[in-house]
Length: 515
Image 1 (cartoon, helix red, strand yellow):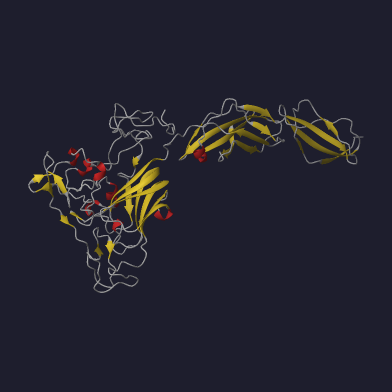
Image 2 (cartoon, one colour):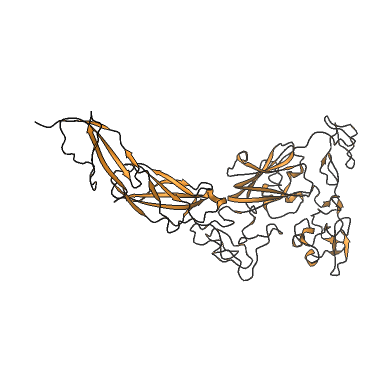
């Protein structure tokens, strides 16, 4: 059986990639899934989609982009109509502005973008696709290697699909794969045939440059990526050299006014379970500007329902264009690796010690099959049933890290009442609880089997104690014979099955015979 946490649903996996049942996990195989294990049927494979190039992976094709088509929001209202937050989770990695979310307006500081994954997911990394300034132009980023425009013709000819070129690996393309690049002009970085975007136009792999213009930097930026900010005292700088005719701004120096203040981090990634991004916990940060058209891949090991991106600084940060945000993770209820049910071995019997008339200590060994790195999710429930009454849970005990023996103190027992005791180990995740194999029920009495009770008494002025020890206590009183008039000191002594005594406080009684 595949190691997923079974929470009692009618099935674990949908039977096909198109079904939408009440199962815990969707089927992400090309030819259907086994409903118990999620394994692909009939030679099928994990699907490759959302966006293309992010193939779902094992176990059971459940690890992949969990942000696709989820609900997204952002801090600015200015760009919500033209560049809504949803464009960052639509599955398209086109870098043109019209395909991106823009979470900040001009002059905004600490802007944010957020996606609601719908439920808790365990995340491992986040990939962010930054936008290109030009709608269809290329930057001098190693001869246009990052170009992802939509031009698909060379002269009167239509470009051939890159998938026809089996010699070129998917990693050569900024889209992530040959299939995603389609038949659009590109300059695959591992080939180096050209100085700018090009394409094949026939089956003989003849090629030509595409009519794609070189992008021009906006005022205030320079460099081959247009990702460097000018630092002039007034006006703009030369878009190639960075020279400022008006001189450098305060705090900046050098021929191109680039020596000066330390640049703060461009953005931070945070995860949480609150709708408010201020309540989220940071899992990663990226330092420095992000190049136009670049892809940022950050490790973010965290668990939660919401992922937020906070843009640090002002709106000239290029990361303010989020063309696609890919969140790699899986359902938190998914157990990877094994998340087994705990169980007691058949020979395990809890030990009962330190018994008094109202309390007892129960101890037991660690349940089997509890992984050492998942101990936080395992617990024990102690069930108690008084003779003639319903069973009830009286205490919960955590599985301590590395602990091999657990212990619990039961209080509030009624003297001389027979009790049945049972211990149940269980695991709990996301509010879902499932018990493992319990110990057998053991039945003990407050006195009959596990204790001896005696009443001790003496004359107040004497040092010598007398005792009454019945064979079987069947009531809450005993008779003491042979007393004479006087003051007596009386106490109750309980001896458990390990010869440990528990003595009550003394009571003083004045005894006088009736005339």
